[in-house]
Image (cartoon, rainbow, N blue to C red):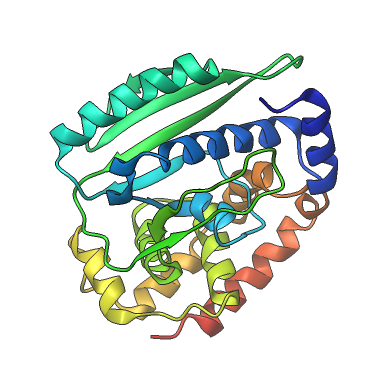
Length: 255
């Protein structure tokens, strides 16, 4: 278990709140234990937290999202047994949450000597195929050492899912993540994006419609959504950054 002093030290180093640090510890703890199980090789980590922990995006995140490539009934038997054992080993509470699609769980852990708990949602999706599977060992400054591969989506596939997210919800974090990925040299794979959009019957969306969606994003909503997940010194610059980000995406989102 991470100590109070380690939480304070990591919060100071990363210029972020202690609660964010402790939540990231819970994320890493879960991933380390989960991917030490043989059944997890068919469960692929994705989304904003994968960008942060694997690809080193500066934006912290809150939930763990996965695409599952095994039978749902078989997976549920495995995950429920795993969570039950994890809760005994690490004193983590878990409960299943109601979901329209896929399976969701809420994990909770109390921090050592501090007056708060960390919460993370686990979101498992079964409806899609992973198109570009990857595997990595997570390197972290937290007191957790990964010795097993974490199976995950490629940057390009996460990029395609972020384009889809931009069109289906209004969250500033999707703009931020697209900016980060483009800065990492990720390019727009048209066929990959079309396949991801097809799940939502959006495959006929044009570049102009995507750019229009970016233009319609609210500065206020962007700041409110992103602010809790960036370092303290970045928070005061988000208004200016939003203007830059919209221009950057318009110029660099080529397909």
